[in-house]
Length: 369
Ligand SMILES: Nc1nc2c(c(=O)[nH]1)N[C@H]1C(S)=C(S)[C@@H](COP(=O)(O)O)O[C@H]1N2
Ligand SMILES: [Mo]
Image (cartoon, rainbow, N blue to C red; front, top):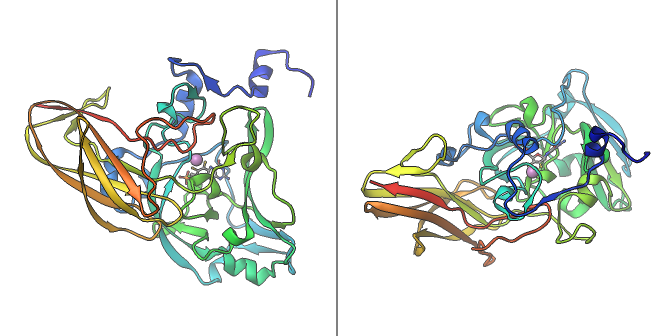
């Protein structure tokens, strides 16, 4: 492409990705925030997030797909290549899993300097019941060849990101793709997928950040060499500098959130609470099927352990709660989870260029009256 000369051409070619300290939120970030809704934090109260409250992240446009004409194209290093209509896919044995999904960019807007991108604060997490065909079933039926090293999942959506035009696609190494919990999901919470969540078919990779769960899958391809698509090789890396090779983003990092107590101030979202005994409540989760073993709650910096309830599924969050005798005053509440691998949420930001995996503890301002 020739060097861009107009303002618009410069924006489309821009690879700019970090704003300096104290930068105001811009129009582009506001626009992204409207398109990519977060889960309302009060919805932490539901074991399963109602579908209409599940967070959304769509890089480009939601494609409008005619499910009657749609075919899943299976190709590359398979003994058989075929195109499967939806009705055929629905005839294969299915299973249902409860999965907590979190966007890798959750917490990005809290970073300083601020990476430009969907400006999540803490709300890019939800839990759903996904029903579909285990991916391994399909890979076995298609006769995956031993020379294949990765499976690539091609979405039906294309666009431009950091100057690079491409179709949204991600790959999994064969060993990860064959794991029994990886689903080709047709239904979400007992109903066919809605357009914004990937209809008619999406991948669900439990325990991984959301980018792995490719929506609107059109083609599954077995390949010999590592896939180098934009969303695999360039995006979704932990990097300190733009040219660093970086470390690929994979599993969800441990995190806990508080369901904001009391009543909200409309504009600031600060909380107001009447003095007395209150039960603080929230959810905690980690990645790769590793259970959360411990949650601590801080009230003005004083930590105390919370009680844990049962996990709502092997790849899902668990509830925690903690009694608080709230006396009049101003408070900052925080919660901090530890998982069975001893991973614990950091108290300070863990900065990287695209603002991935920032699982620093949440802070909630409360006025007790
Ligand atoms: N095809 C496609 N799949 C995609 C995306 C996308 O933009 N296009 N976004 C990914 C990201 S970054 C996340 S966090 C999840 C969000 O899924 P949801 O919108 O159903 O909550 O979808 C993933 N799958
Ligand atoms: Mo994401």
